[in-house]
Amino acid sequence: MKSSVEPLKARRIYLLLRDRIIAGDLPPGGRLPGEPALAAEHAVSRVTVRRALDLLEKEGLVQRKPGSGTFVHDSRAVRPIVADLSNVLSHLIDMGRSTDVKLLSFGYVAPPEAIAESLGLKPGERVQRSVRVRLIDGEPFSYLTTHVPEWLGLTYSEAELAARPLLELIERSGVKTERATQAINATLAGPEPAAALDLEIGSPLLTLTRIVHDPSGRGVEHLHALYRPDRYSFHMDLVRIGDDGERRWSPALGRPRGSDTAKTDKNKAGEKPTRGSRAIKQRS
Image (cartoon, rainbow, N blue to C red; front, side, top):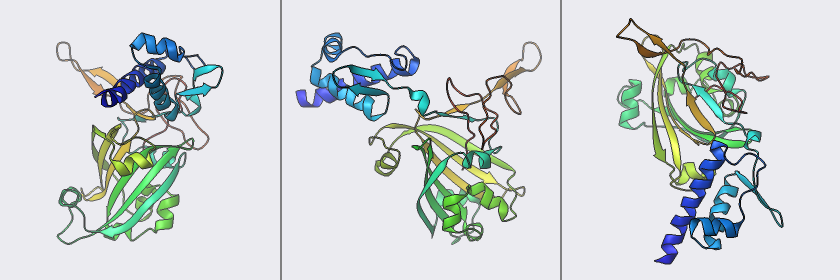
């Protein structure tokens, strides 16, 4: 029984310390209490504390210095991405040029029924399916599975998809992307996404499903994206509209205003970054 309880206690301490680090209660460079102090505070063994610190170190949140202690790592070195929900398609190509990508698989398959229906495919029509991992500052943050109608997928090669944003390749073919629908949820990491995103199986992930359409309403891309929540978050600017008594919140159109909007050499993004973060638009 003890062997099964200790990992749960270690994870609880890990989550508590992680929340304090992310909230800024333990600032970058700050020293954590020693193992004996943490063990006494949480009424656990030093072995359990050590397991919790191992998890924090694996995530890159702390750095352990023999003889000196455990210190909060300056997480500003790996900057999270803040994606603008109110501007789904704008600047996706620019964002693709600001990050790196690993193409894990590429092929032509019969799509699942739900994807075929969402893209409006005819019976028997195939899709080009790809799986990619996108990285920022050398660290993985998203696991992307895309399905594109075969007729459109044949306009680009595997090598091109590994080097260029998918939307750029789609529009290069002459297809105009006009609108998209998307849904955001939460899920747990399965074996393949966990390995690709350098996480433990069962770790929490943000999930986004997006369907991109051309002006005629035809589906040209189905995207299922999994994001590490510590490296990616969604942002939306809202404004109050309506008459007195019926005022409500509505998404703000265009770029958010404010002096804290960040720009990079390769990407001019209209998003508000989190503290110490570089703002980059989401892409497919």
